[in-house]
Length: 230
Image 1: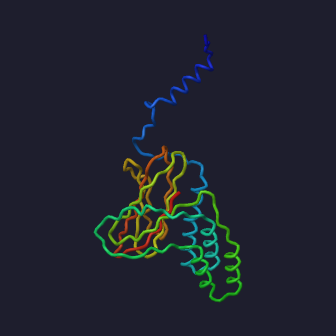
Image 2: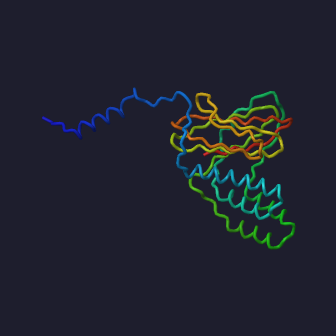
Image 3: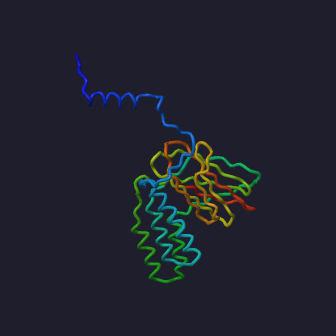
């Protein structure tokens, strides 16, 4: 006869709790934690890529070639996987166009233009480009789409509970765009209404589940958009 001690009883109780389907996590309510969670390699990749985009915007505005070099190096350091789900375009706007991705090579070339013939800056560009090292573990997923005026582009994806979800979006024209992120229950969990060239959201999901991001073009003409997520 097998005799149960306290340790064995607790182990059996734990096993029965884990196996029971009746205690599945309640996924009602808003999938948004109120505490910061530790960054992952993939969330760091999206943070770096988004910050690189923003620094490039600053460098372009201030005509700062050296800042553009740093932005190019940041983008060059990220391994990017191109997304295959192009999402859905809804709205009354029409028209077609192309969406251009801001690559590190583009930004290095732009840095040379901003150098205005300065040999030291041009040499710094060549050195940075030659020493570029791609390969951040767990890189970002980038989806590119042309979004006509007066339309909303919606892309759906999954996020892991207990890990940060980072979303960045960059437009390639001056048209105003808003970004909104929703959980699977339709709750708004983050938004960026700044109309900056590069938009940013960070969410701390409680459980693993689907999310969706909406990029809303309020302008009178279309724009290319690059959406990055982890």
